[in-house]
Image 1 (cartoon, helix red, strand yellow):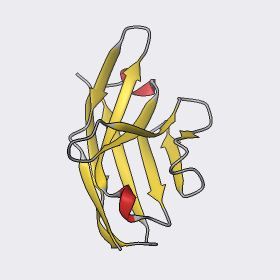
Image 2 (image 1 turned 120 degrees about the horizontal axis):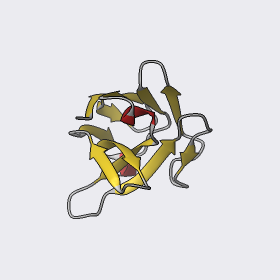
Image 3 (image 1 turned 90 degrees about the horizontal axis):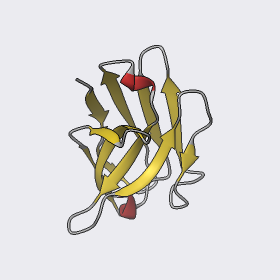
Image 4 (image 1 turned 180 degrees about the horizontal axis):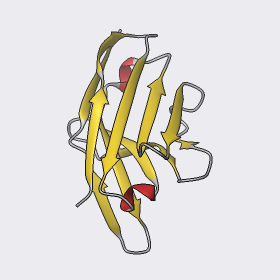
Length: 117
């Protein structure tokens, strides 16, 4: 069974920084693509950033240049460094690992990030 544990998050002022971490256990599925999504009340979960096992990260346009995603393939973790935070970044952030071929996915429990203006 794959298990994702997220950490980090909290409340910051606009312009501040927060770092989120996600640890995946239950390999070898943890070698699959991993990423972060976020959700605000009443809205659908939206893509933030993702990274494959041996490739460069990809980002949503809304966070490009402000967020940096990194991956540790030995520890099966991904970290999302969020800089220059804006109030619109306020959301619950979820970690996801997935396999497109089998349509299998796992989600973390979510961690909250709040950005005050």
